[in-house]
Amino acid sequence: MSSTTVSFNLKTAGFANYANQTLTFRLLTAGADKTDDTVILPGVVTATSAANGTGSVSLFRNGESDIDSVFEVIFPNREKAKFIIPSGSSSIHLSDLLVDHVPSGSDTQQSSVFDAAIQRANHTGDLTLDSLPNGSITGTLAVANGGTNASSASAARTSLGAQEQKDVLDDLGALSAPASDGQFIVATGAGAFQYETTSTARTSLGLGTIATQASNSVDIDGGAIDGAVIGANSAAAGTFAALTSTSINVSDGNITNAGDINCDSISADDAATGLNVIFDGTDTGDNKITLTDNLASALDITESTNSYLKFTTTNSGEKVVIGKDLDISGTTTAAAVTGTNVLSTATLGYKVGSGGTVTQNSSKSTAVTLNNINGEIVMNNAALADDATAVFTFNNNTIAATDVVIVNVASVGTAGAYQVTVGAVAAGSCSISVLNVSGGSLSQAIKLNFAVIKAVAS
Image 1 (cartoon, rainbow, N blue to C red):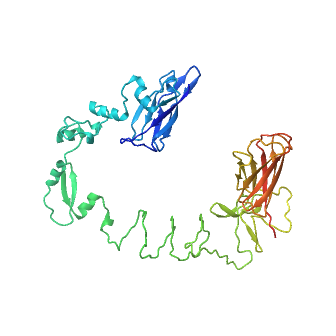
Image 2 (cartoon, rainbow, N blue to C red):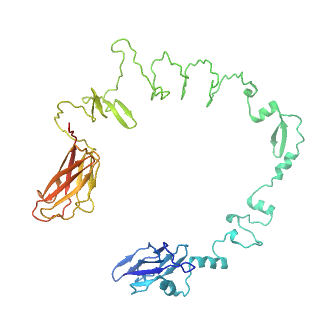
Image 3 (tube, one colour):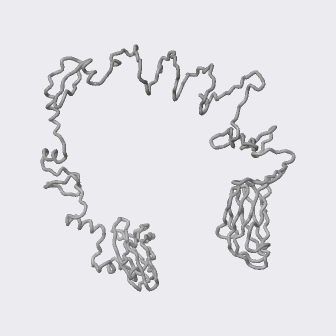
């Protein structure tokens, strides 16, 4: 199967050029050609008219399909029309398709707008009440469709299972006028009401003796008080054998003579004042923080998820881990302790997680960006001639103008085929040059390892 260029020329109702209008072409059903084993799946293609109203789009020639396959075009006003691109047409106008090549041989294009009008004329499809002309509506509307399935009020109540409200009002109407203030209307049985006051009303409402106590003289001898604030306006003393509470506020008072306090956290009451933990033991050894034995993190001093100082008590692996910069005698170090000599008996370098990888796009001269102190650059596999040099910019915000950037070849198809040099080291970038010394042209995705060594000029 092949494609066909479908062109169009859009005009307004006043025959002016209709610019910047998007037509949506939708393949409604799949096409297939058993000759070339091609199957075209349904989908959408769009095209926008130029300033003069013209445009074009390349579409699958569904007229060549061995099964029925139909296109639909959707105009900016949401009107839709269907068509079939005839076999053998490398190009055709949309107007020809809408007039001469509609599905099922129809002479008049049936758009969605015309379809809706035909539905209204034939009383088919969904019909909203606001689309009806003024006049009367006869018959009944089923309950399932939002109606009452009735033509009278009483029949509607029966259909909907509703009670006429006057039934209860008639029962209430049997009451005489109230004799005094403070009377309640209480149901005494089916269809019967009466007035009640004081103790009779309290009994009907299920109230106990506390309902008769004054607010300033309440005596509670049992039960439980839940969800209440005691002493909100004028706190007094209280004596408790045991106190269980989800929150205690002592109004800036002191908690004294306490033994062991078990809690989840201690925080400042006022952030502006802060928190002062005073170790005021007078004898040597009195003030201490005791950690739990054999824990990978027995004590961790943190801010959010950042660990500043962590104490590890793991057996035979006890240590203090410094997670941030350490300032010793006014000298700030980068999360490390420095001295005249920094020595290692095993590994000296960057830890896992500090590196990164970037892949070069387009060509071997395309700039790459990777803001890690070390990592890997995978170059583009474009051809590099013998004795030719590919130069690209390496952007990295960890590089300072005084730093030393080390780059070498990590892996490549031909060993010893390349020489790598670094130049133009500046704040945030450097240039990397790769020279082909293999004796022939090579098209390989060269992998380069790099590391930034921090250095200063003075």
